[in-house]
Image (cartoon, rainbow, N blue to C red; front, side, top):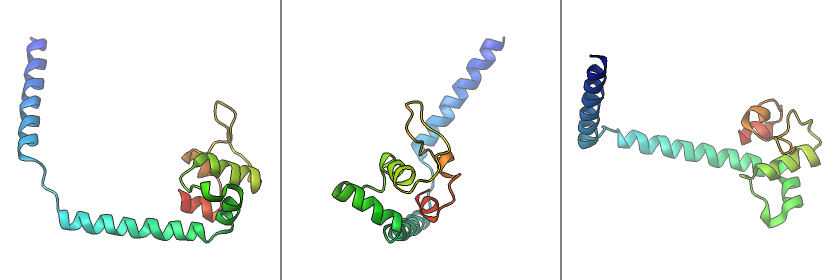
Length: 115
């Protein structure tokens, strides 16, 4: 009897999911657009703070046109190599880690903005 109960549960769930897919989910698009615009403004503000910092100036000197704020490898070289920030952990390959949990341990404004 348990197998039949399980089948009925999954069958009802599949029917309900099909109805949801057919009818869709209501979204307040005006609010969503405002929220996206707000996040975009925050990201641009943080990127500008980062680009105005000494860390970014050093980063640009090291990498030139290849400098990329999204590159965690470059971030590791800049923080641990050029700024001599103590490295709390390494990856399995021995590189200094720039995982979020590791970066959270570093008390620098630039790293907080990066996160």
